[in-house]
Length: 146
Image (cartoon, rainbow, N blue to C red; front, side, top):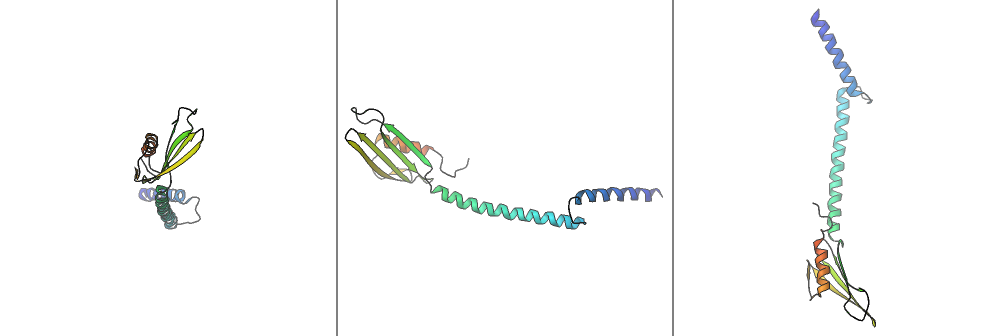
């Protein structure tokens, strides 16, 4: 008789636990609830994989964008006031890009552009252009983690 009472209590506890697990679900069986949760987990895995693929494409595209910038302003001529001249380096994640220089004088402004490939100029750089290039190279590449 005691064994029957013990089994009834145990069955009652298990029934209450099952009801608490399936609460809020239209499914009545534990198998149906677990199947529903498993399908949700599978969908989350698919979503994460899709997000990873999209992230990889974005990171690849980001490496080709100009995200490393270095700017140096200076005064190359004594007869002009202020630092109106500048050297501007624009580089992508691979260190490719260009340096634009502007020399401002009373008579006009001249612009020069020099190509940069993997962080190295194909032509000689002025001190200011080299300083702008070093500033740009010191910045992290677009999309770099860490």
